[in-house]
Length: 297
Image 1 (spheres, rainbow, N blue to C red):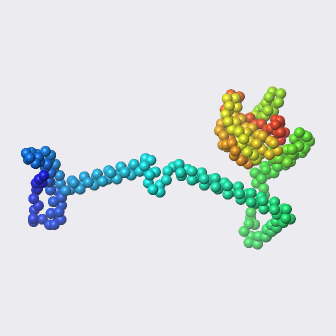
Image 2 (image 1 turned 120 degrees about the vertical axis):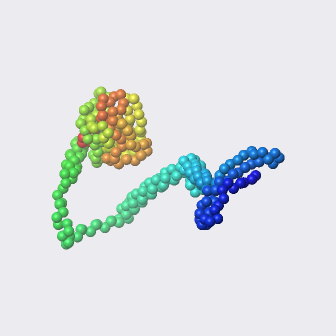
Image 3 (image 1 turned 30 degrees about the vertical axis):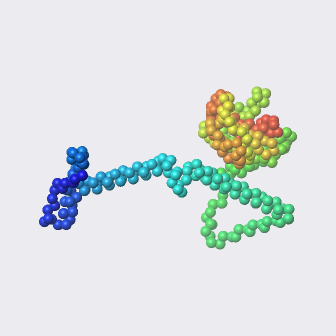
């Protein structure tokens, strides 16, 4: 192997010029046959070109390694990185632990309240609010808002409905319950047991939220050709509420729901549905009852 210098550095130039000139000098790398001295391979290059080539190759390799680590499963083999399944499991366990803490906290409060009652301990009455002497709130409007007036009117109607329930011996167990209207709309088909229509049809806007009529637990969610998406909720006093023709279900079997909490979305699913509406049923002790007798729509 022989290397021949193709350019000479001028001795009259400064050291920097000599250095830059030397980087641009071209050299020939020749591979000869040791026996015949025949030329097998020749490559012309300069120190500057060699440096640029090495730098470019380094950049390409670095980008390739980063891409492999960032966009392929190889990153899971990096110590301390962890895989996606483990991270999802950790998030799920953290959510469950938080839910358990809330449940335990509520149970502790409930047990403490029972113990206080059994021991005859009465919680101290809250202090009366002190009179405002700063005058900071003298211009505050204390008149009830429109929403407050509507709530009070609805409460008075519920009281009147409770009186009607007392007069019906079949519904005496529902006197102390306040049923929440699942949707706001118009009743187009009433309860008619002779026609096997065990509920009422409420026409409302499509994609409206359907709310639970009472506190309870979701015991069934599913889809059928006739009724579309359906959700059943078990309440206290052996009451079951049924919601049919939903476009989507927001709860799963076993979920606890509160009165007025969104559980599904109004839709037009199922062969029996002729437009966006909710078919709502109430069952008490295994017998269907007229929802209009206990719920204000």
